[in-house]
Image (cartoon, rainbow, N blue to C red; front, side, top):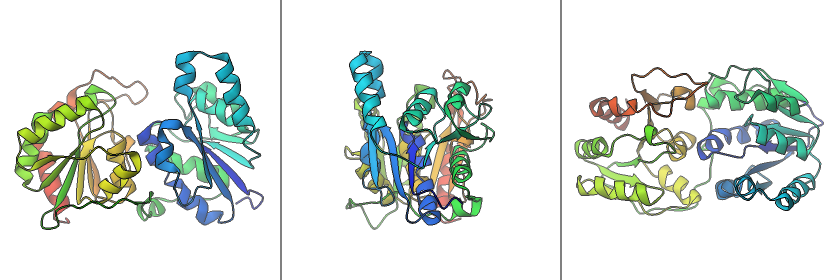
Length: 333
């Protein structure tokens, strides 16, 4: 452990699931460096999830999507100026390992730490780090996040520590849910169509579970599918439209969450809520399995270094298997 470290910057720009799986490190950093200030740099859209985190002193935002879309030189200059004026950090840790995140880290300061060229999807990013860590890209993303931070700061984050983690996010919003039945959430959306479990099978599961089933949606297309599920199952209801902080609170109120490989599904693991993640074109590398957080993978073979977004094998996961695992988790087995 480096006692000279007083200020730490974390760079993790996107996406939602990756930020959820990265934020676990904050409680371990605070335990090892209780007097250090910790600041996080992220995309604007994800700031509401982090701004009230008890272990973060400040959250800074960038809008790289807008920068890419507008191709504005003046916007680029102002972004660089804002980043370079944030202050001096004793260490800057890039947890993302992409060229864009490594550039942001380097603009923040010289003492940068990230993954080495053999440990990331974009090896050129490693050229901008002063120090780097080596870990297989195939390892669980949660383990990778914990390893690079622990390696950078000089302490170990063990499997036991991860399993015994405290809930990662605060839950400021209360929801009035049925107390006489078990509450189950389904996350039906995802960033790719091939990650989405068929709505027909979700409706079947709701009918078999015979509990209060809440269908979480994030956009208009997902809302239409959620309404279809509710129409075809008397047990399913449409979840309210939720901001990011409300979504964390809502998921934290559940007895079980079932969902595709996407950010809201990962929130259940983050909050120590039992969950089942359904995986088609991705693998259980995307989660950290525990006795109550499990993944069910489709039959397809996956090359994690070259994801096939046309792999729709998630449709082949039998709903009876999902149902069996759901009942086991609900019964506390």
